[in-house]
Amino acid sequence: MPFPIYLDYNGTTPIDAQVIDAMRPFLETEFGNPSSSHFYGLKPRQAVAVAREQVAGLLNCRPEEVFFTSGGTESNNHAIQGIANAHKTKGRHIITSAFEHPAVLEVCRYLQSRGFETSYVPVNSQGMVDPAAVGNAIRKDTILISLMHANNEVGTIQPIEEISAIAKSQGIAMHTDSAQALGKIPTDVQVLGVDLLSIAGHKLYAPKGIGALYVRNGLELGKFCHGAGQEMGRRSGTENVMHIVGLGEACAIAVRNTNRETAHLITLRDRLHQGIIEQLNDVCLNGHPDYRLPNTVSLAFKNLAADSILAEIDPDVAASPGAACHSDTVSISHVLSAMQVPLEWAKGTIRFSLGRMTTIEQIDRAIGVVVRAVHKLRAD
Image (cartoon, rainbow, N blue to C red):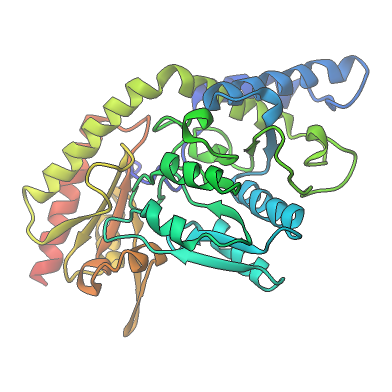
């Protein structure tokens, strides 16, 4: 049997072949510790420096403003806890939204147990934060605003530039989780105006277990990991050279290809969306119709259960649910709940996310699979 069509790129991406090629020497021969002063440390040390420049090139920042982490979750933890620990004498108030990834929400909840307060600004029915609501939530003791660049479930892109300008005018640090945005839409930190930006390698055709955090020069940020002082003293521990090289190469590819890939993804995304709604009734798009990621289609199938749809299409298409049904209860994702999507729609939500390796032929096959599955479930 052929493998299912993979439409879950927001969950994780395959590793690009060029990334694998760049990593291979550091798996096979270049095993040295980059902190070593002898011959075996030279190439690994140079490779880490090149990767830092490659990440900085995608973000349009200085290489010394980038340090490597184990992934997006660690980057978010370091950004939020680092600001909290460094600025707690100034204030203990953080602003975020109920729309964020758990790697932000759970950090805020943890800090609340440590004496910090969090304000959760709402999103509208399309998943958009109103910059005015952020401004209204600011207090004298606000030290950080953390809002994701683009949502992982519905793809809505937030007005980060406007919100960053508000934060800057009040002298408040601004962090964005850009894990889903990187390589899909522009992530120029000078344009975005952010102080901190989180990266997850496995959303960008690099390996799992590697990420990065951009920290604007001059920003005071508490250390996350203490030790021998690697990564400019911010994140101690022997560098994961092979994966760092992979992330750097993935960013270099994104610099070259993002514009072309974005146009291709939009074509495929819209083909999938139109192909389904032209053949099925009671299907609704979740998220903003225009300000959303070029690869993401979150569709709600009215009065159906997401797990039933996925079970029906599973042999042929791999996608993600927006809800889970357990006996007499339905568990709706916190993203759809924050958008106040009605239950009869939310419980039947499926996220289709496309990527670099997705083809037109796969999209057309997927349309047929989904349409047949929904017809079958509605006939039962």
